[in-house]
Structure formats: C-alpha cells, structure tokens
Length: 402
Image (cartoon, rainbow, N blue to C red; front, side):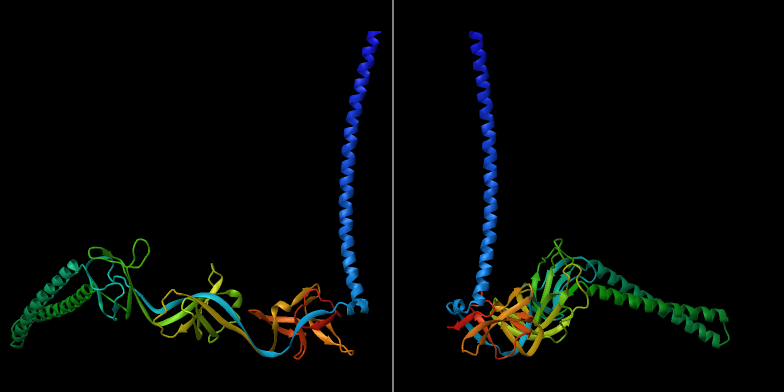
C-alpha cells in the first residue's frame, strides 16, 4: 500500500512540472502575439494620421467656409528687375612680381664677408656677399704671367723674322728660313689671343666671388654668416638670401577647372583683404594655360596697385565676376521651394471679390549670388511674391498682408 502511494505522489509531481512548463511556453507566445499586434496598430495609426492630414488639406481647399475662417497672414514684395552679377569667391594670396632668390654663379663657396642685413633696402647690382676667391685669384695671376711670357716670345719672334726678311731682301739666306720665322710669329700671335681670353675668363670668374642683387627691393631673408658655405639654399630647403620688390604686387588664386570656360583675361575682380578691411578693384591679368594635376585647377592673377601695407603671401579673397545680366528678375533665394515637379514660389493673386489667395508658380532659376537668385522664367515684373509666411501654403489659400 505504501508503494502505491509513493508511485501516485511521483506521478502527480511529474504532471505538475509538465503543466508549469507548458504554461510558461503559452505565456511567452501570448506576449509575442501582443507585441506584434501593438506594432501593427502603431503602423495603422501612422497611416491613418497621414491620411487624415491629407484629407483635411483637401477639405480646406474645397470648403470655402472653412478657408474663410483661416486667412493666413503673409508679407509680399513686388517683383522687379535689376542688374545681376555673380562672383566666384576664391581664397588667394598676395605675391610679388619681382622676387629674387640669390645663388652663387660659380657654385658653393665659403663666405668671407656679408654686406647686407635682413630688412635692409638694396639696389639692383648692390654687393651682398664676398666669397672665398683665393684659388681663382691665383689662376688669374698665372694667366697674366703666361700672357706676359707669350708677349716676350712674340716680340723675340718678330725680331727674328724682321732680321731674316732683311737678309732675304739682300739675297742672303733661304726661303725656308724666312717662312719658318714668319710662322713662329703667327703661332705666338695666336697664343697671345688665347692667353688674353684666358685672362678675361679668370677675371670674370674672380668677379663671381662677389654676389650682387639682381633686383631692387627689401632683403626679406638673410640666412648666411661669415665662414658658412653659400649655396643659395639650406639643407632644410629654405633660401639663404631672398630679395622682394613690393612695388609690383599681384593677387594669385587657384580656380577650380569647372570655371575654365567662364573666365577670361580682363574679367573684373574684387580683391578683399580681411586683415586690413580693404577692397581693391582690378581685373584678370593672367590665366595659366594648364591644369594642375593635383589641385585640379588653374592659376588666375590680378595686378594690385602699390600699397606699403600689403605683404607677399598675405591672405586675400578674390571675387571674380563670371556672369552678369542686365534687367534680370532677382528674388530672395529662401522663398524658393521644391517639389517633385521642380522649383516654385507663391505669389499673391487678387480675386474679383477683393480677397487674395496664394498662387503657386513654377520657376526656372539661374545663378545664385549670396542670398539672391536670378529667375530665368516663371515670374514677371509687378507680381507680388510672398516673402514671409510662405511655409505650408497651398494653392488657393486665402491670405492677408500684415
């Protein structure tokens, strides 16, 4: 009897555990079903809200009484014509027409004397440096000594030739002796010419030890001292002496290649110097003939009048005129809206009953300059364009001006 009772209790325990497991599974399935149903209702509600909103807009358009009760206040401005200009805004710099980077004419040499200081004004041809000239000076001395020796030999050869000629005129001597003495004179004359040229070359080489300025201007960089080797450029890639002439300045900018067909020599330019709060009017003086493969642009330059406050490499803004139209219709760019059909604006249309409604007008735009845009088609002078309150307007909506 006791055994039967134990078996019965064991069976009831197994049934209880199984029923608990089934209840957990059923509860999880119900929860998932409720989540799915909730997400479905949310989607249906979103769709319903959108449909209600769209339907309300259509009712407002068709229901005159409803529209009359909701007149929207707007601001309008008459459409007019004006001269329209479009500029390309570019970041540029000031550069000098005459910048000279001084270098030795006969190669690197040791500096013996420096005659210029940084910031000093120098004239074209002014002596800047004295380089070591000991070897070249010795070569010049040797060339002059050789020249004097040849002069002595030439004088002796001429004397021999004259004596031989006198004997020949008296019938003494042979023709071979006369020709030989004459040939010796000619050889020494040729040697004398070569020696003279060698002296000139040595003198020119000696003069290369004097380093002169190629232009007049300011010694912007003087990075050389006595005892150092003058090569023209340091190992870091910087110039040792740089002379800048600021009397002829220019504005330089890199122009993207997509503008290559819109610019030409003589195009007007406004040069703005933000640091000095200055604006200079100029024109394009140079357009490079090639496209930079790295920057994908070309160089445009404009001359700048002499101004002591401007410095080479100073940052500027170049505004190059690339498009101009007279009597163009121009409106604020912010009133232009877009839909699937294209761009449009709203204008105010007067009804026969004296009321005003919003009228949607499709437009084609041209160039944009700042906050204004050129209108190619779609508007005519005299129309009243809605400039404020145009958001959420619809065709035929009653409007009023404040």
